[in-house]
Length: 364
Ligand SMILES: Cc1ncc(COP(=O)(O)O)c(C=O)c1O
Image (cartoon, rainbow, N blue to C red; front, top):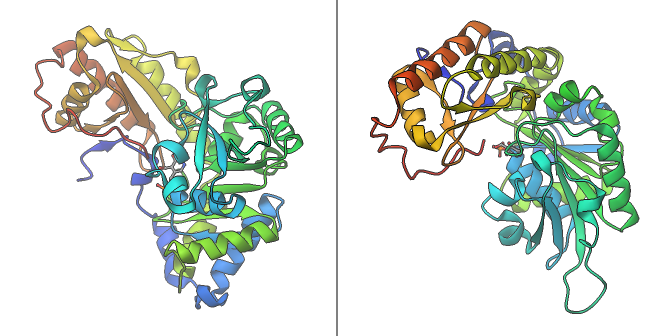
């Protein structure tokens, strides 16, 4: 895509900044598979300390981190509890089942955030008819739940409930730094009761790739073994780890800017006729909104926006998701909002949008 497009499809579309490229260029490297990459080792130590845990393992992607966590915590035949909007259960190709023989039982909470009442009766009794309920998964921020940050008190309540029920707790923290800013807590406070946390560097933090899984020594040992089995063991990965360290130093505080821009976009489209959005639902860098069915489909609006130089993906038949990030300015998000207004005023149902109709909805 050319730079002429305002790209709000995802925070994964960012390109490394000059400073990050310099950090990549200067990285000290070695064979990570043998534990000899000094920059990967440093990143793992930094992140483990930041989250108050014993160990961490750097890897390729958020999906890989999550699947390593499932494998590390569960045995074949076990079950995880997860909100029905969760990434692990919707957008990872059923990896828990195919890679680890683990099934999932759905929870349902507003915006992907459940509470102990939603968990009552969800742990299966010890009986040979049932699988063993082993792991509770929490996503923060919730992606398809609406970009919402878990309240700290709720996280503590739910995690305590899980531990009292004999379960482990995994946090899919692909956007955990966005959550901490939106929720008004530190990442360490939020994950105090978590047994593992996956974090993405390739989203709001602006790295070309990379994720890390954090937890206690024994869990990370098992996860590291899973990383190898999943084909994700790394060699001179210090170049990408250097990008991650750079991002932790330079790109965390600025996430607030993305949140402010997201809210500005939401405010600007809120009064457009045919668009449905509750601006108070926007807490982080993800803005979900709907086009009224009588005015067209999300695919049609997305196609019309493309003609206006704006990329926003559908995330359901009527629903779209706009995502702010490092590579879009306030001025650009306001131009994107103006493009939504122009498209709606012209009418989107005249668009053929054939290239989008029927395609899968964005997950990133
Ligand atoms: C909540 C959440 N978890 C996990 C992932 C997976 O990350 P990746 O694309 O790096 O595999 C994503 C992004 O797609 C996500 O939004």
